[in-house]
Image (cartoon, rainbow, N blue to C red):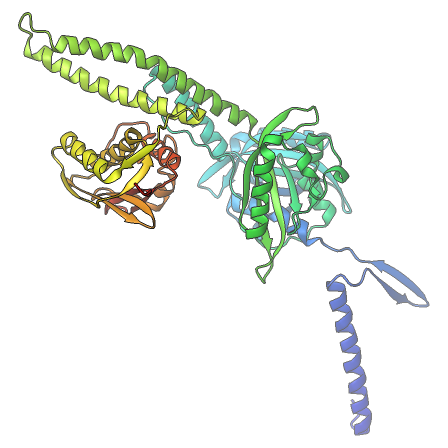
Length: 554
């Protein structure tokens, strides 16, 4: 810098540089915000026009929230792109995935299959099941769905990676249950009904263009969509158009209602409006009309995407075909109903013959024979209880469980129920209190079934404690029955599952019998009485099961 330049010249030059810097900063900010679509740059005596590509935030975030992993390979099999889901599947950060051969993540027994898949995938759509390596510890089964992409840089291979772990586990469990049903009709196991994982939490945006994402979204197995906070659908993937046979103009906005079965429309629309209003996750099962006119059951789920101000920007949804699973469940319930009904008659006859044998007095019967008859009667009673539960479940599913409602003096009935419990469990110490003057509308036999089931569970899981507390009192215009034991208690996970069909609390120290249907039946009976069934429990400290029924004036 010339030390002899006047001070005023230096001030003027600094002001000019500051103004140029502010103009450059404003230009960069406009480009970043999408306010500039093109730039004209002077090149010598000419001017060159440069257009700008913008990344669509909606689709970048959407690809991040997929349940499936998504990668792109070059001709040499190197990973050019990976979404966060795939990095979670293999347990590595993205910087250790990009540029790595995808073959390095394939377990050794499946490398040959992968190489054959890679040869075929460049010419046609291909799918193959393989196992992915997760570190050096274990592998996970996956389905690879391949298709080629035409990018600016040339041809690339897009691979959608679906985790089959839960699917494989469900297949194994179902096969085991079928084998057990064939071997013995009185032994059943719980059936996992989980169909897919919930959508993952929001992650960082990917720098993918709208067209690149659209090609990936079109190749996931589910129908997918996005909708605005108003509820208007603004995107469907190709699976939707292939299934419905309709174009976007026919189903945009709220036009999707035309493909829903009329019997499912009200429930679907109400659930959809509720989710839009409250911001809660949307989940409903309904039937979609296929382009050939047939309806198939689907599980619909959608979650809202929020900005930093916690305001919903748009929704991301999927529709998964569950027609085969629904039919399998219906056949299973039908089989349970038929099998339990067929078992009831021979069991009744067998119990009658055992009673006749036990009452035989024409000549002395050896003591050992009498003991065998008593043991056989005990086993028959247990089997009859299981068959009765199976019949109740089948009737509940068919909506045919009988409830003859009448006005009941619930305080008096509860004292009778407690007296019966004392006779059935004479070794247990019952501490009871019943508030007087409580009346309800209900069925006394079904309510006793609920009460005795809860008392039976309290005794079954008492962990050596012989103390059971029973209380009846009024609360918030309801009669509340609380049954407390001091046994093994429940974990938070168990408390969420305890009222599901076929769920049983597993404890290695205390082996218990049953099919895990009792609490499910109790829950349905209480619901039919317009009440609520619940539990308060701490693991290792016991449980309090309670049910509440609306009070009425006598």
